[in-house]
Length: 336
Image (cartoon, rainbow, N blue to C red):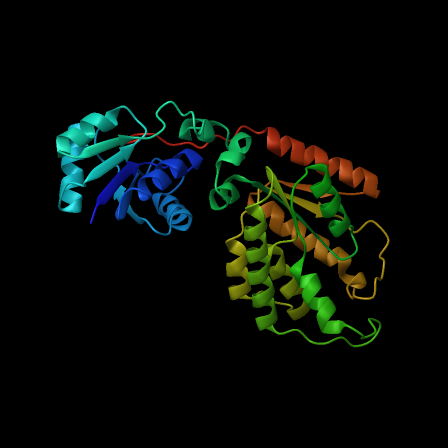
């Protein structure tokens, strides 16, 4: 059995890495891909390992501490000790590869050293992730896409605005799953009479499904993902109906990622579309969202007044978010 070996930081994994790994995998029976991680790196090694396992399910991905100097002899000795033997062949895209392989008595294959096949580097991605999304696999892309979440009481224009923002930014948007669930629940019932009761299990399901749909669409979004609510907001909808918080629903919402919240104010007429039942508590919902968002640490912009002004305000806030320089930090260290 031919044992192939690749070592790197994969900080983050990009399509240059994919080209290297795919090339290697075609030439060996078993390929070990070693991810070297250091606490100073902004993207945890465990996450990079999980990405590579998804991208390359037929490879043996390992995670090791990046504790050595950038010295081929140290890495060669460590590799042989770690594997229990020298690999049959080492694949790299770097000049160090020849000496690294020689010190292990191993054959070396250099893959796309001039970056002609895939003209990207980890440094470029770290410096400006949103400008290089086309070089990232979907699971990695989703990590860098900015997430803008619209929240607010009923009939404040969130869904219409989410759709228009997605068109404006040529990107994806995440519909409100709770609305879809509710429409099925009350289909055919008059909204001016008693409505079906909720169960906490429904809210757990709604929060879970909302997060799953958001994560799926983040993989295809372009620079920014527009979300018509999120799992965090589901916790407040639970409170609206049950008059208390639910730890499980809140725990799901706590895992949400958001870069900007847009809170739609209830200063526009309420429109009954056949499914809404919260006209009398729109003020309470708005105040509760505002209280939570102000305490949460994520930037928030309140959208008030006529719809046209709300859209312009939302675009200004998102443009500001996208202009923010947000390079991926951390000390490079170790293997490239």
